[in-house]
Image (tube, rainbow, N blue to C red; front, side, top):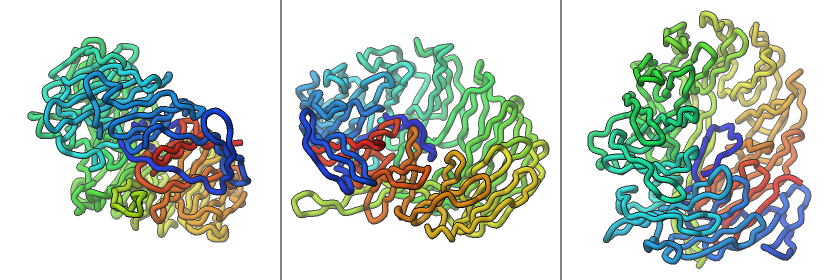
Length: 610
């Protein structure tokens, strides 16, 4: 699992999962040989430099990913693994049937679990059609089998291939608890905590049932707060399932309290992130699922709640028009916490309108509620600044979908494959910028100039706020709502605004045909470039910014110098598989300094900065 330093799009901790991989072809690349690992390439203007090119011993069709810092690169197929070090040299390779002592071999389900210190685990699951399923855990650094077991059954749906909609990360029934370096395994009647490096059972309890949707580890008390969910295709196994929130002693598995919560926990279509969040604040547990439920940390008693009925219909008939292959996310802002209050976007249960409530953090007392907003598909952001609260009505939403696309089989033929996509999009809806007095929730001012769309808001020194509508770019004084300047973004010649990036003293507007940047002090244009078109996603990783273009079955990652809009370089990937974060065949280190590109046996390490 790979942790990104920062991803503005809020794709949090993700596991690198069972996927096919392919090679990322460098644009404008010149190659030269070096001794040691593989071959290196010189750097041309406007292109990345290749650090090295190397090969796996096997053809990576299942996994092809790098660790946190790129010190380890692994490629696997169903039956074998091959691992390279940071210089592209082979660390180890081998067939699973020889590496494991219990005969684990054909493993359609595999995932890597990286440790924060160094190294990690390769988790293998051998689903046997006739006989007992096998599990094995290998050390990624050495290839040594750490442990194996045949005690864990029904970890995945029987007869379902890994490519057919299963997790792109860890199994729904296996959760890695990084703080304990342990795996929590969900069985039909219990959960079991085992040491990741030995497989030794630490404890087992039958008072928690289902998969682990979210957990918080309390280091001071050595306790875990767990919220469960019903594994999608294994639901029939968990008879008598109920939504559980538990506080548990991490050393022996003792359940200190058990509470229930309202709502159905779903997983995002591509990332497989459980759609719920949880925080511990002021000796309380805050669970966010279709609103907020608040529990006393000491005894599990529910203190207060503010919940609603979700309108994210999965059958295609709801307001969000979700389908099996395409779903919308990030439509409602997460709760905004201050020292003594919390602001929550709510949904009307009958008219499906949206509005914002402010609650006292301790008692849950409703302090104020805004008027209901009809026709808003999303209310994605709430901002608190000084004595004002800013609410963004409308804006971009995240789309996750699978598309059936043709791929070459390498022998002149083609085949169809589901390819994952994650991108931002705008839907026709009511848009506006609302400013409220925090003391009473009364309207201070509002702007409805955003006819076709509204970008996210960018606040500057708690005095001004910036937002765009596609063709225009506006700046308002927060205290009064006075329009300080109105820039015709259309004059930049880069197309309609699709997103905004807060960068030092500039607002960078990501647009249909390129980038334009404006100085926050007066709205003057700092630069405009139309070298990049069709970008639908961006990443802020470490100190680096990346844009992605997925048009026409392509996947191009651009590295951008946001100070001047220049392109550092680009990587294009074509083919199957890859990490859901970055698309087919691409992985990026957690500091954003290196890109890895894959195709079959081939691996390329690419340096982002000079």
